[in-house]
Length: 113
Image 1 (cartoon, rainbow, N blue to C red):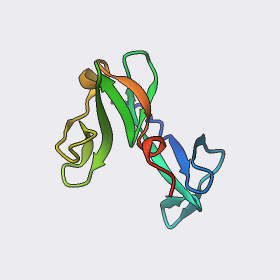
Image 2: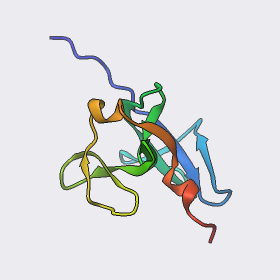
Image 3: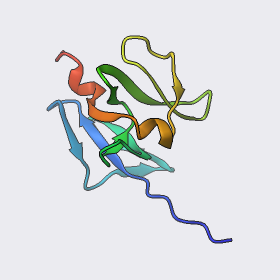
Image 4: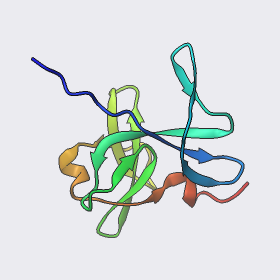
């Protein structure tokens, strides 16, 4: 049996400039990835109904309802939850992603501090 390699991709929220960006480099220390003054957001491996990549903490929409995609350590998987009712989540799978449209990153909705 041959296994297909999985792409592990990240975007990052730049805390200082408050911009969502693609990274050209990430530091690694003892297997842990980091980027100073950034919050790393991992690709879920799933695409929305228009073929756009969905990342951790993305806000996705079904009709006019907004949901947030996040990683659940306790369930060991990707989940989505109503944006105003975290963490009342449901598993985020290919079927669910195919019904949703990516809207923005959760961080883009947060007021500046």
